[in-house]
Every structure is written in structure tokens, then in C-alpha cells.
Amino acid sequence: MNTDKWLKRIASTSQQLAIRSLNSNVKLSVTGLSGAGKTTFVTGLVNQLLNASPSRLPLWDVAREGRLISVKQEPQPDFDVASFDYQGALQKLTNTPPQWPESTRNISQIRLAIKYRSNHPLWSALAKEQTLYLDITDYPGEWLLDLPMLNMDYRQWSLSMAQVLELSEPYAVSAFKTKLAGAAEQNASSDHELAQLSAKYRELLLTLKQDKGLSYLQPGRLLLPGELEGTPLVSFFPWLLEHPSVDDRNDALLYQKLETRYKRYRSEVVKRFYSDHFSHFDRQLVLVDCLSPLAKGQSEMQDTVKALTEIMQHFDYGERHWLKQIFIPKIDKLVIAASKADHVTYDQRHTLLALLDGMLIQSKQNALLKGSGVYTQVLASIRASEDAKVKHKGQTLSVIKGRPEGDELRNVFPGALPTNWQDQGFWQQGQFDFLQLQPQPLDNGKAEQLGIDALLQQLLGDKLI
Ligand code: GDP
Image 1 (tube, protein in one colour):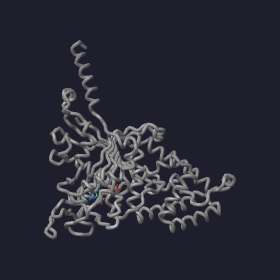
Image 2 (cartoon, helix red, strand yellow):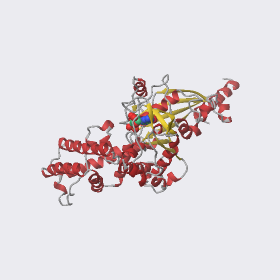
Image 3 (cartoon, rainbow, N blue to C red):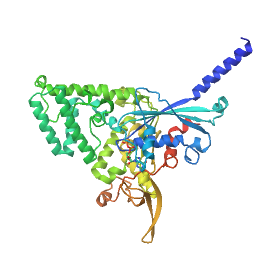
Image 4 (tube, protein in one colour):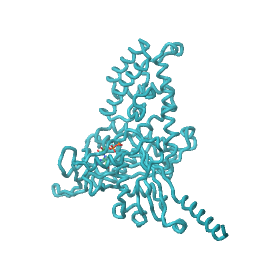
């Protein structure tokens, strides 16, 4: 090979290496409690990205500046994680009448390749176009509520759960305790007996979730087991009776077995989620449905705030935080978004943001949440209403125009939000009305959004310069 060719080859190899380093990857994870809007968000986000244009996403710099070349779905990187079913979700939205996609019940993933032109002098001189691989992982926020279990032994955990349960549903709890006492008396401890008792405990948790709107319920995987459905790993429950003394432990077979399962759940389920998934995320979105608990009542709101505070512990990386003993966190940007903002009128969206900020006050006192890299905003992933105005008693009122479930397209005045969820005046008057809205028919396969462009700028703006 002559020198000229040799030099050219070196130049082209180093250029290729430079280009490869320009092709970056961001692992974005999306979480929130059941019903917070995760599936709808991922569906809406993918739909917006696949149909991106400057006019549809004006607050996303790369789109507004005309630098976005294309967005395509690519095979996902992790073969052991379920695929996010974007096509299935889109199918639901294009049904007549349109339906919301199925909610998140397990962890799932989707990868998009975002091709763009950099406006950075160095990158644009090296290559005409760059690619950002965006890996979106969606997982139930309930899984994060198990975190305190890592700091408690079986006895401590049982006592803490007994307190939560007995305060909320004493009658159903006493029925479960009677069953447990019967099983303990017979020293029943076969896998079958444990599975039956666990199923009863699960029913109890589901009642608390559905009837009382409670979220802070453990073990989280018993409610949303994903691939662990029916396995012994999720077949256990807290001991709600008097705990056997150290001398009696050897004979208490049921107690021993529950204690063993509790330990295995902590190491094989809770800890493993952190090492296999959580520790790899770069950026995190936490969705919060502030409106449904607000419409249900003060105790539901209290429970949501408690669960949210617990979830936020995951992003408090203060120097001595014990979570650091389990994994080294990578997340450098966190957005907490109030979902379903199309349920409130245009002039109430800033109040929704204030409400969310108020719900996070306790969490914000923690290290990372006080610092940079944490943002709050409101959004509607797939907008089901439009803003409208009506005349009422000589005044012009802001309303939303949408289809409440089982109803026709009409103007709705949902009411005013409080800026502070602890405002007693608001609870006494109970003014907020949360009517589920049906999705609107898509326009040529394209959904409408609110706030997704601002979110994209916040989460990816620095990666797309
Ligand atoms: P997940 O359990 O967190 O996956 O929640 P989903 O994404 O399934 O959302 C639960 C429900 O909230 C949906 O079925 C919709 O009724 C509603 N929802 C979610 N996102 C939006 C939104 O952007 N606008 C409106 N109007 N409703 C939404």
C-alpha cells in the first residue's frame, strides 16, 4: 500500500471513530403509579417523534430549527425485556370509537433512532448527520415502593404493614387475620397453603387499592407481578399476629417460611431490579396523576403524596444515602410531570404545576431534588380535549371540550384546583370534578399533545446540539 493510501485509510478510520462517538445513546425510563399515564405517555411520545415537525413540536430545538432528519423505530437493545407494544397501542387509538391503550403491568422497552444535524461546529464538520439512540423503558412505580423493605427485617416489615392495613381497612384485615391464625394453629406451611393465603392477602391489597385508592402497598410485585405471577417469590405476606418468641421460632413453620420468602424477595426481586435495570437509566420521567386522587378525597391525596415521597427517595443521591450501597446511580436528569393536563382548563395549568410542586415539598428537601437536574412540568401525552370559552351569567369562562366516558362531545367545566393540596377550604367545598375523557380520533394517525415538546427539550436538548 502506498503512503498516500495509507494516510487516507488512517484519516477515514479516525473519522469513523469520531462519527461513532457522535452516535450517542440515552436510556430514558418512565415510571409512575398505576393509572398515572405511562403507557399513554410512551405511545404519545413515540407517535410525536415518528411524526415530528417544527410546527408539531415547536419547543423542541432540534425540530424547530429544522435539524431533525428522521426518527425510526429500531430493534430494542435488551432481549430479556418485553417489547413496548406501540403498534397495539396505536391500533386501540384508531379503533372506532377510539380507546385508550392497555395500562402498564410489566417492564417494557422500545428503541428509536433519532437522526439529526448538529449545529456544533466540530460535530457538523466531522459528519453531516448524527444519530441519537433513545431507549425508552416503562415500568410500574409500585415496584419502587418496595425500597423500604431493604432496610427492614421480616418482623419490622410486618409491623409497619400491620399499621398501614389496620388504619385503612380494619374489617377486611381482621378477616384475613382469622384465616392466618387458623393456618398458624395447624402449622400449615405447604406451598399450596401459602399460595392460598397469599391470594387472600392480594385480594386485601386490591380492595385497598381499588376502593380506597391507596398506593403505598407492599409487596408491590404482588399487585403487579409481571413475569413473577404465581411464583413462590411473590407468595408471602406480613405476619399480622403476635410474633413468635425466639424460643418458639423453631416450631413456627409457617412463620419461618414467610421469613425466608421475604428475604428472597428482597434479594432476588427488589435488589435485582436495581442492578439489572435501574442502575442503567440515564434520565428519568416520573408521571403523577394529581387529579384523580384530588377528586377522590383528602386521604387518597395523602396516600399519593406518601407514595410519591417514597418514589423520590430513589433520586436522592446525597453523599451518605444507603441506596448507594446497592448501586451507583447514573440518572443525571429527572423530570416529574403532572399528567392529564388536558383535564383542566387553560388558565388552571399553572395551578396544576403549583399543586405538583407542593406535593413534592418534602422530597425537595432532599439532596438531589434541591439541586440542578430536577424539573417539574405539566403535560397531556395524548390530548383528549380542546380549550374553549363559554359565556356564563355575563362572564367568559374557560372550559374544556371533550367526550366524557359514555357521553357526547361537550363543554366541561371541571372546577378550580387548589394551589396547595392541604388547603382545608378546598376539601370542605370539594370543587374538582374529574371525568375520564375518551380519546379523540387521531388525525391521519397523529395524536395531539400538550407539553411533550418542552419535555423533549428538557430531557434530550443537551444531547442534540
Ligand atoms: P399506566 O397505568 O400508568 O400505564 O396508565 P395509562 O397510560 O394506562 O393511563 C390510564 C388512563 O389515564 C388512560 O386509560 C386514560 O383514561 C387516562 N390518561 C392517560 N394519559 C392521558 C392524557 O394525556 N389525557 C387524558 N385525557 N387522559 C389520559
